[in-house]
Amino acid sequence: MHLEKKAAKIKNAPSNPRRSKYCRARLVGRQFINDLPYNEFELYWVITYMNKNCAQDRNWRNKWIFRRRFYTEIKKMAILLHPILNAYQNVMDYSDVRVKDWFLMSSPLPTLCMCLTYVYIVKIWGPKMMENRKPFQLKQILIYYNLFQVLFSCWLFYEASMGGWLNGYSYRCQPVDYSMSPKALRMAHASWWYYISKFTEFFDTFFFVMRKKFAQVSTLHVIHHGIMPLSVWFGVKFTPGGHSTFFGFLNTFVHIIMYTYYFIAALGPQYQKYLWWKKYLTAIQMVQFVLVMLHAFQLLFINCDYPKAFVWWIGMHAVMFYFLFSNFYKENYMKSKNKKVKVESNGNVETTSTTKKTQSSKTGICFISQTALYEDMDSDKIYNGYTTNSDNKLRNRAFLDRVKLK
Image (tube, rainbow, N blue to C red):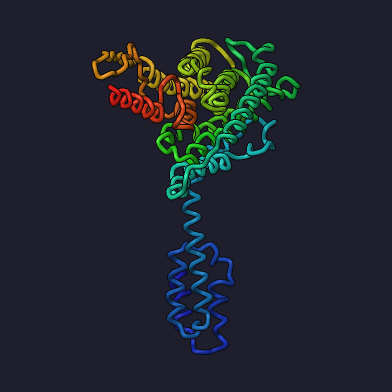
């Protein structure tokens, strides 16, 4: 009733140009206007809009109404997000104060934005930009990139070793040391640099796109590289040390072997004969994930002052990637076909027990898909013991010459 009386008073106000200020004074100048719900404020707007004394204030009033509506929607959104924001703040209260001011550590949003940007580039923008362009020749860049990754991984492995895993850490139960001791800070810094290394690995996929190897940019490959920086961010934010850093410690060692393979492969086809151990890379990765699983899940059966959430997070990562890698290994190295071609009178050459490995990009995880990047850098060379098209053409031409002579 109080609002209706005010509205009626405004509607019945006499026509007087000097009373145009009355509208603004009564509707906006008073403090109670700021506390009105939107539906009640709209009642005032409709009545004053009908009053000719307020005609000159219509433009201003429309802006005010829009602003009120916008603020009302923001308040509704804030009410919905309030529990989520409270939960987020409660979780962040458990973070490590030592890393609070480190680069990219104040909030997960920058990391999330970079991961989403990575996905957008390799799945949408990159293929579109390369659609009508020739593939880039990146031999020299790949050589230096892989050499950098080898050296970077060696340094990370050394820091993780001296930070604890080869310098006093327990492989059964290792709580996080949140102190300011040199050893604890060394492991925290090693964890942060391992987090940074996940961004440098984005270039693995960028090189696929630049060389138009779109088949290698599979969904699982992108998911793996896209989710790892955010996953490691939470590890650095809450547990920059302790039990779960075993994954990074072991992973950097595997990366030394992996990027060494890439480095040799990028040097050229003349070095392919030294890469006979290619299939063992997959086995090394599988052993890595088994060790991580056993190391993580053992805390579920013993008392250890370490967050169980990170135990499950690291352990399930290892389980998922183990099955992906084992599937690749079965498809590429355990399913072989032995073909015997008999020598016939037309001069065909006999080949016995020729094993042909099937190329597969279904999994597309890490080095699995990247290996193909170096196996086809020069289509006129020999890779892994198989002759290419140019060699077959020469062989067929020689055979035809022999037939003509006969």
